[in-house]
Image 1 (cartoon, rainbow, N blue to C red):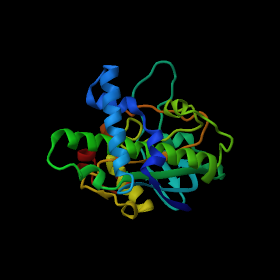
Image 2: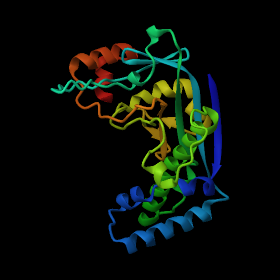
Image 3: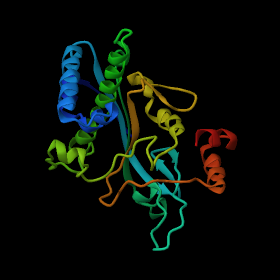
Image 4: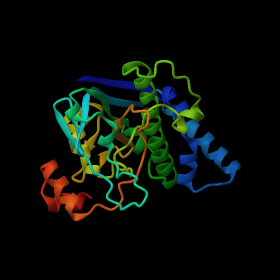
Length: 264
């Protein structure tokens, strides 16, 4: 397993910010107001340049799908599968489907990651409510931007499966690259407690992330997940998890069913 830790200056990741998400969080649609908020945010980022940084931690290793688990190096990452009934023959997906099956005896590859910001970016705002919200949203966008930049470097350099990739920022934000980066807490990877499994491999504390009892990350402006290279890999929603799968998932996680039910 290859493990990497990267630190970025704010000016290195700020160009990767996906600003529409920032505007959406403010619930602002007027373009003039959007521009004003962006300029205020960029001014604060520039002011914080010499005080704070963002951080990425990722690992690359041989991996295979084994049913609804991913075997990553010597670790198992249990996952959930869609259970919805479909009439058109569309398969019920699990992220493990985008890796070579273990029984083939041929190793595939997977990346796992976490990104975050220095905690001061979330807390250095005094008692002003506007500044509190502004700093939190800036921190959130910088953590996501760090994941975007890190993933680009993984594809083109560290993993290197797309060395000739040359995409505009708009193309990056619309995910026109090969592969996917499913994040914990999103529809295809909805159980935040899977962070305990990823933390056991990556050691989130090395970049200042700690986990709550439910698996949520602190700083809040943190992102974790998987990096998959399969050309046909795509995002999907797990949807409703039935009692049968929940019991199976609890067994594969080695966690009491009652606790897993609480997480899900």
